[in-house]
Image (cartoon, rainbow, N blue to C red; front, side, top):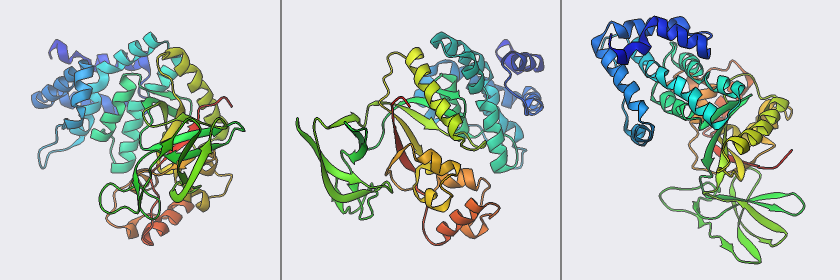
Length: 369
């Protein structure tokens, strides 16, 4: 065992786990995977190489989209290969603590963010029947390693910018409106990438007004042009502005008080720890933003309550993200989808009828509650 691979020794993993409290459920799984890797020169080389690549953070993140993880040869057990990405991350978890403390991030937030690797193992197991980490989860975890994503209570918050084409306006009475500042849309009000569009959302802003197309309550762009007169209306957030992206970890419901506490803490922590970052809005890009869900569920259920603090805007309709969370296990056709919960049954019916639950972008004004 070389010095570079010392992080894979059982004693090193146990000591790290005692120090950082990484694994409550999967410590034995991680130790077993590390034992297999230590006994395979090929796997050991791949794991150490990936760990070394992650040391050069800027270069690694730039090259990450083109990265391909090692795969098990045909007929070979995939367990060690499924665990290899997580094992390669172990040295970076201590770096995560160092980076986070350098920013002044509170210890409980550091501890919560360090639970990301185990959460990835859990969700992977829920989807595929065994613990592991694929490219999707490996890439997602990089944000935690650099303290770009923080787990604060019930929610996760990420430093980013407003993507898409929608701007947020506020008037002097405290009302909010969304308006696209660019983009082409189909007749239903969804954006189109290619092909024939029904209309182009041209946008005009002068010293006295902003004029464009309205976004309705279902998060679709309408053919109705509106004019927001100044100074009564102010553009407070537009594409490219700093924003805090909100992510919702699976499970544990969406208790309103817990979520509001998380938002308040996020405002304070980001202001104190990242003074050069000036978010204009909370933004949530998720299937949970589709207003259709509020029609399927009681108004006091967690998802409708969560939605009510956001204004929904359209993105390119994919309709796939919902399956990862509501129907995590692989399936061949919509007919195979389970109906174990009321939500599963209702969403399955939508897809069987040719509809979808759209991934949408939600804007939550960055204001004090």
